[in-house]
Length: 90
Image (cartoon, rainbow, N blue to C red; front, side, top):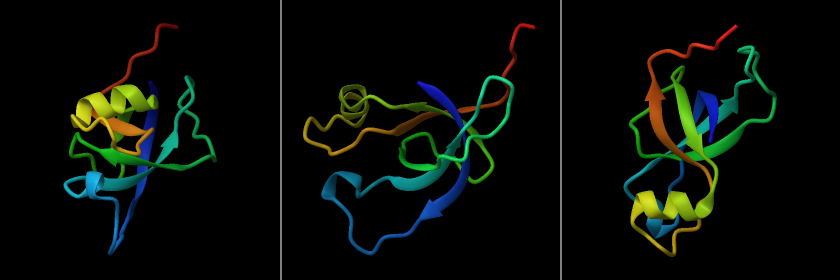
Protein backbone atom coordinates (compact mmCIF):
# COMPACT_ATOMS: atom_id res chain seq x y z
CA UNK A 1 0.00 0.00 0.00
CA UNK A 2 1.14 3.52 -0.65
CA UNK A 3 -0.16 7.07 -0.49
CA UNK A 4 -0.49 8.99 -3.75
CA UNK A 5 -2.11 12.08 -5.22
CA UNK A 6 -4.38 11.83 -8.26
CA UNK A 7 -2.87 14.04 -10.97
CA UNK A 8 -4.82 13.08 -14.08
CA UNK A 9 -7.22 10.81 -15.89
CA UNK A 10 -6.81 8.32 -18.72
CA UNK A 11 -9.32 8.29 -21.57
CA UNK A 12 -9.52 5.12 -23.61
CA UNK A 13 -11.97 4.16 -26.33
CA UNK A 14 -11.02 0.50 -25.98
CA UNK A 15 -9.97 -1.17 -22.74
CA UNK A 16 -9.84 -4.63 -21.20
CA UNK A 17 -13.31 -5.97 -20.33
CA UNK A 18 -12.31 -6.23 -16.64
CA UNK A 19 -11.86 -2.43 -16.56
CA UNK A 20 -15.27 -1.65 -18.09
CA UNK A 21 -16.88 -0.19 -14.95
CA UNK A 22 -13.82 1.57 -13.52
CA UNK A 23 -11.95 4.84 -14.13
CA UNK A 24 -8.24 4.82 -14.90
CA UNK A 25 -6.40 7.58 -13.03
CA UNK A 26 -2.82 8.84 -13.09
CA UNK A 27 -1.38 8.95 -9.57
CA UNK A 28 1.85 10.31 -8.15
CA UNK A 29 3.34 8.64 -5.03
CA UNK A 30 3.83 10.78 -1.90
CA UNK A 31 6.79 10.46 0.44
CA UNK A 32 6.41 10.49 4.23
CA UNK A 33 7.41 14.16 4.30
CA UNK A 34 4.62 14.95 1.82
CA UNK A 35 7.03 15.53 -1.07
CA UNK A 36 5.89 14.24 -4.43
CA UNK A 37 7.66 11.55 -6.43
CA UNK A 38 8.15 12.09 -10.17
CA UNK A 39 7.24 8.46 -11.02
CA UNK A 40 3.56 8.69 -12.01
CA UNK A 41 1.64 5.52 -12.78
CA UNK A 42 -1.88 4.46 -13.72
CA UNK A 43 -4.23 2.93 -11.16
CA UNK A 44 -7.73 1.53 -11.47
CA UNK A 45 -10.20 3.44 -9.27
CA UNK A 46 -12.78 1.66 -7.10
CA UNK A 47 -13.06 4.50 -4.55
CA UNK A 48 -14.51 7.27 -6.77
CA UNK A 49 -11.41 9.47 -6.47
CA UNK A 50 -10.84 12.67 -8.42
CA UNK A 51 -7.98 14.92 -9.46
CA UNK A 52 -6.22 16.38 -6.42
CA UNK A 53 -7.39 13.67 -4.00
CA UNK A 54 -4.87 11.90 -1.76
CA UNK A 55 -5.56 8.19 -2.13
CA UNK A 56 -4.51 4.83 -0.76
CA UNK A 57 -3.22 2.55 -3.53
CA UNK A 58 -2.97 -1.23 -3.29
CA UNK A 59 -0.07 -2.34 -5.50
CA UNK A 60 -0.47 -6.08 -5.22
CA UNK A 61 -2.26 -7.89 -8.03
CA UNK A 62 -3.85 -10.65 -5.95
CA UNK A 63 -5.42 -8.18 -3.55
CA UNK A 64 -6.57 -5.95 -6.40
CA UNK A 65 -8.25 -8.86 -8.17
CA UNK A 66 -9.92 -9.86 -4.89
CA UNK A 67 -11.41 -6.37 -4.45
CA UNK A 68 -12.62 -6.41 -8.06
CA UNK A 69 -13.99 -9.96 -7.61
CA UNK A 70 -12.32 -10.88 -10.92
CA UNK A 71 -9.58 -13.55 -10.65
CA UNK A 72 -8.43 -12.93 -14.23
CA UNK A 73 -8.20 -9.11 -14.22
CA UNK A 74 -4.82 -7.87 -15.49
CA UNK A 75 -4.38 -5.31 -12.69
CA UNK A 76 -1.64 -4.42 -10.22
CA UNK A 77 -2.49 -0.91 -8.94
CA UNK A 78 -5.92 -0.23 -7.46
CA UNK A 79 -7.12 2.91 -5.65
CA UNK A 80 -8.95 1.53 -2.62
CA UNK A 81 -9.60 4.68 -0.57
CA UNK A 82 -9.73 8.47 -0.61
CA UNK A 83 -8.07 10.01 2.46
CA UNK A 84 -9.47 13.02 4.29
CA UNK A 85 -6.25 13.68 6.19
CA UNK A 86 -2.91 12.11 7.00
CA UNK A 87 -1.17 12.58 10.36
CA UNK A 88 2.43 11.55 10.82
CA UNK A 89 3.97 11.27 14.30
CA UNK A 90 6.86 13.61 14.61
